[in-house]
Length: 312
Image (tube, rainbow, N blue to C red; front, side):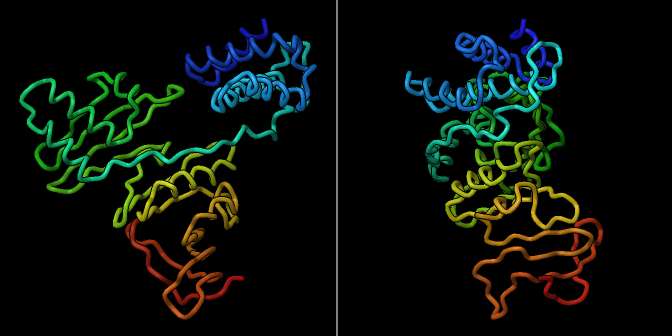
């Protein structure tokens, strides 16, 4: 049966159990209108999605139907197990619906500190639990991720002011990530993650956010969207974002869209640093289009070699 084979294909691609079940229900609805998917072209599918909107479905629900159908055609294009054969996914270049997203409200630091002070006396198990929940939320865990944590997912390393907490988190799509919570003296807590960076951006003037790898393995056009989500959360803070790039290419994955929001965009390769974009420079000379050679010392120190020259 088509739906069962489609579900097995999704499972083989490591989609979560919940996603597989949801996509199967979406496809069952789609197949009630189109018995054979090959009968539906791109315009037919667009009409189908519009009919969902007219029936009262929200943007998120419609985009979920879109993803399920797009994956179905992707499966049919490569399966070879059905009489339905598609040389090309008709939705390959069709994008999901775009809708206005509101920026989440930010809890001021004073209010957050006041909230922590209410539970800082850890004399009862309930207060310890509440403190742990607040700490995990502060470090970007979702409510469902916190609820699914087990004791063996949390490891405490070190003692005293050098202690750190290592947490293994299972997120959407059964993807695992490691979050390291460290504290030294009176320094602020820090964390690691590999997706949804906008959720943990520290907003406000004087705050620095470092994203050492904006991780994407497909649909690289989303890079611009991910950076825009981070940009909208800054509110005066700074963000340094590193993006992988292909050899001999100045722009990272996502192309020019990846530098639309940047105040400063640089490209580094083969011990050369290029300034791709610079705004509001302090010196009389325009730094755009300049490059300089460098060498890396001890794995973390950049030492200039020669002077700045024009590469354009």
